[in-house]
Length: 107
Image (cartoon, rainbow, N blue to C red; front, side):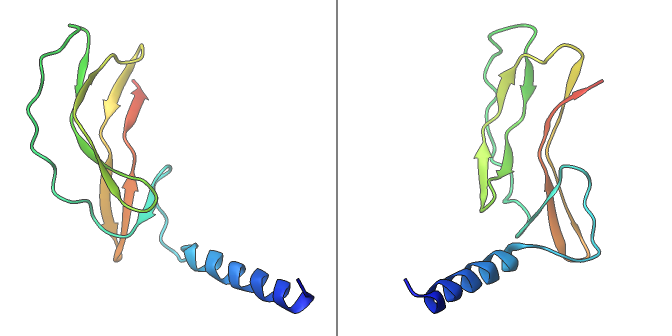
């Protein structure tokens, strides 16, 4: 491959990568990511009986995969010691959509 073709490929790749970077004065909460839109409406699900009396119900939610939302069905989980479940959060600020994944948080 000659140098001009290689340089052209490098510049094209750099331009594409630069187009994926979101810049500006809008800061998100720690752990939040910029997404393209709000999530779809929640899916209505039936809650199954718990298999373990210590389990906590984690309601279904839309999770951002980096390219699109995917539904994570509601399920029972055993909480890590001293933790509580925090559901994912979605919000819009100055026209920019944000998603913050849920997870187990220390109390």
